[in-house]
Image: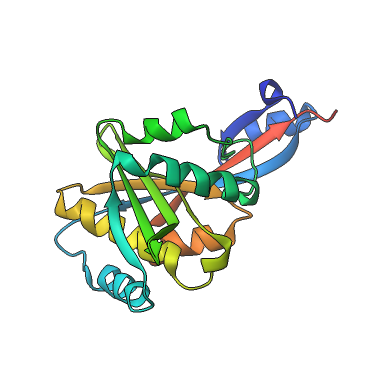
Length: 199
């Protein structure tokens, strides 16, 4: 699929109908979500998610740049499992792009099991929001709450650092990712459609 032929619009944009009338077809749907922290926000759910994963023998921590190689190795393994939409495509990383995750105003978090990195959550601040850029878990450790545990640990740590506004997004076909961010308190408030002309 030629990325230059892709049009990405909010689902309520009148141009969606115009594109369909012009022969474009829907090739992907994605979503955006936001979490704004105020005095009514309770940390109890985040703490419970963290406790659950730690009780299974996992260690959660913020990662320094010395873990770039371990993140790279994990992401190369996990990259083929990311769902594809034109708006959410996760490019295969290089070691250099992985090292760039440690730029200023960026925070990366990991889950370890027997001292091996088995899950990661990468975040970065853009304007007044902190974006959860991506998260992934080694296939042998999925289904154990590791992904949501890292997410909860990341958000709690960032709240402690006085970050208050969070955003993320994903592919509509990745129902697990959507369910995870909703359980963390995010509200799905954007739907995006990707259109392309048939080949």
